[in-house]
Length: 236
Image (cartoon, rainbow, N blue to C red; front, top):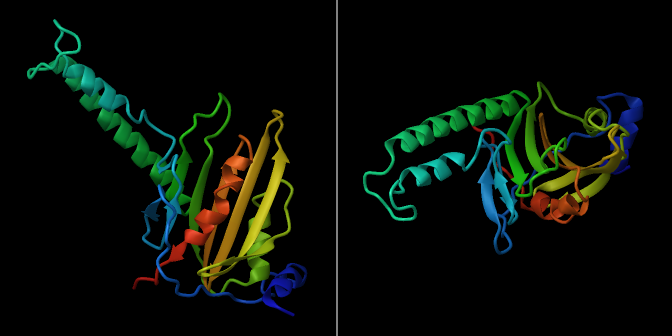
């Protein structure tokens, strides 16, 4: 019985059934043109970000402060012409907007980190009212002891309305459990999710993609992002 079949046996035989997996060292990821690299805030991992996506949180008025600052540097007599003196009142408003934006984002990041999410990447498109932003994120959970595949499957399936069975995904850092499902929401929308669960001894890394838009938005990038994932050696 290979590890993948043992994982399913683990769901029937208790959370300490299955096998214990470890990641392996892999060369640095070679990213496609236009992609950028990002590091988790706990410095545990890196991955690639496709064009049109950015690291961030859906909080604050990102860009508003810069716009107000731009207005503040325009001459009140001749719009469109630069004025070295600027508009002190608008510059003050821009400064306060920037400080408020920074505080909102710090609060949002702290909330994510309380859920062990140390990297979140947002899609550039704006959701329609009532929809959450299309995103993917990396969650890093440290366990008290070895995590077995059966236990990991049980934990991950609790995050789904209609728990799917995992498939095997080969990554440069090792083998992952891959989950994918489309769930109908009460408001008539469809929630598309794809997740990769990577086990490294007592640590669990969950890379999850979520959208209420066309599922192609995440399915077109999920494997490429997962292939770019690199786990760093634990720090003392």
